[in-house]
Image (tube, rainbow, N blue to C red; front, side, top):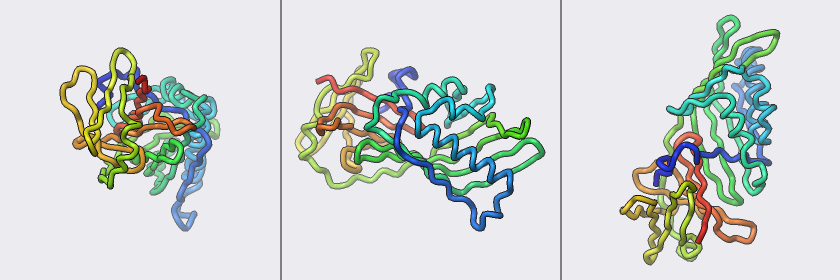
Length: 252
């Protein structure tokens, strides 16, 4: 399944509420300079703002010329902030950040902060991790550090099939709408689950990874069947490499 073919306009980063950011600083702490500690604190503030879906707080110490490169996708500050504040009404989702391997490289008024970050998106009791290596470039002005460039490179996630809970499979079967006239139809053949998208003839088999989460062979993404408070499947959510997230609503 590769819903990126549906179009970039359908790629959403849900604003996810009620989680946390954990920073693992070098030990002992003095291994990180005063600048490094200041930048690590700014990083935590920025990620906490992302968790709270607060675009204004997220943008507070980001230069207006800011550019992010997520794998091969270039994103402006305006788009980044819009993604952060998107879909704030959905409180069934949350996310958390875990940051490790923090390093800082200083050169006068410029500094580069590098770190590994695991962003875990939670849907009820389901969790989908995104792991990336990040490099942030800051400059100092008026006693404050401002982020001007962010590069994120995703680490591939190794998928491993688990024993299938086929009692759940009938609840997945149906048609899911990506929008724009595109959809995916999920079908069941005994103990196997398949998906076919608009314009495709191939039925791609989905393999269970955990709970309501699946994957397909030769695809780096994860597929999650999201449920409402009553336990009914309402969405198919595709998490691709980097932060690509596409949501298809179940329509039948």
